Length: 306
Ligand code: SF4
Ligand code: ZN
Image 1 (cartoon, protein in one colour):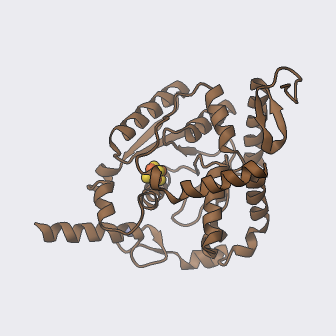
Image 2 (cartoon, rainbow, N blue to C red):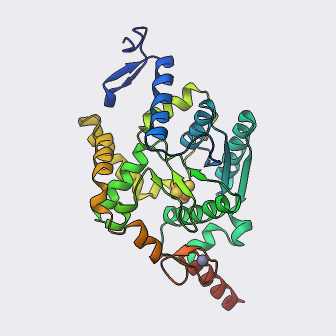
Image 3 (cartoon, rainbow, N blue to C red):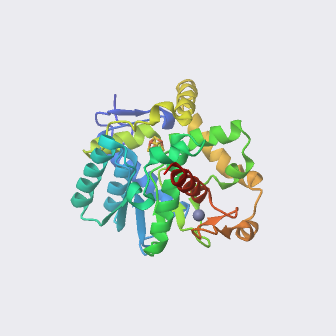
């Protein structure tokens, strides 16, 4: 198998791009692709104060490493969700990478922040673990980034993650979520700008990058990932991709072109809709935000149990 770019011995078959590449051409191709996404979509530039959410997995760890290679100054933030051995190992690996890159790493501990564990929270809500975990992370990472004056919060969501969320939103015709699904969400009152530079990168590519770069990322799966609905949707998309290479990328790109059809709320209307949570001041469209609703329920139930 020959590399299509340098004609040397090829190694990786990127069938979705109809491209076979050797290790060094893959690195150049992949870096260029991410840099193009950052520039074309105006995600951020070198003057911005950048923060990346790191989970310990190949995507966020790889993206942190890659952004540093591209010359961006990016601090990391790890949210310790208290999932026992899994979270301890993840934290260790994130700290190791932070030291290797000589970048600042912030750590937020869920139990210290909320006084209860995620398991306690789960008892008082109908949300699935991943939905609750996502809610809590979005809340605390956004709050932290704003408090510390960061311009942009970066996450390592790849094409497979985003395409499975898109499929879920299409299957349920979630028009509001479809209108909000984007590679970036601009900053607005109470919200820091959020961006996803890996949006057009297949998981296969982010894995190859992490392996070639010899990153010591967490191989174990989160204890809650087995039952996640997104996992099943990802498997369905893998089957489609096997028979029609490139379909995931097309699905996402065409959606982004036509996304304006699904945007029921213009930014101005959205701004008018946003109020501050009466309890924590976090932006919400209700009187009390989703997280405070669960906090209040826990407080009420635990005081009744005494
Ligand atoms: Fe959170 Fe679910 Fe991811 Fe585990 S798999 S870290 S619970 S979102
Ligand atoms: Zn609140």
